[in-house]
Amino acid sequence: MAIPTAAAANAYAALARMGEQTASLGRTTAVPDSSPGFSAVLKDVINAVSEAAQKSDTQAAAVATGRANMVDVVTAVAETETAVQTLVSVRDKVISAYEDILKMPI
Image (cartoon, rainbow, N blue to C red; front, side, top):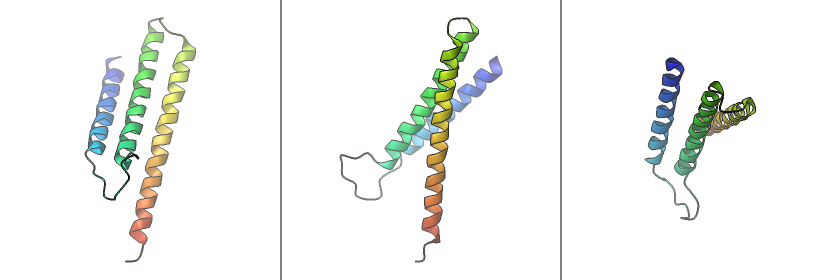
């Protein structure tokens, strides 16, 4: 069980580094102060995915020791899967928009 735990810890560390990197991104356009910047939204999404993954790991460990219900584990894993799919979808849209910008004539 040490290998999956180490893999999970590495994944959480990578997500944390991604969150820190997005926090350092600056705004390039004037945006009203009341709306969050893209980097703040991205950081929140990455943190939500990380928290969902940690929750599902905690639930899986709890069911292995008999302290949790299997339904809770399945629910936590489904929430994590949804969060990851959302993050991947947003990433794909950002990349697509960036590619469209690169194709624009100058």
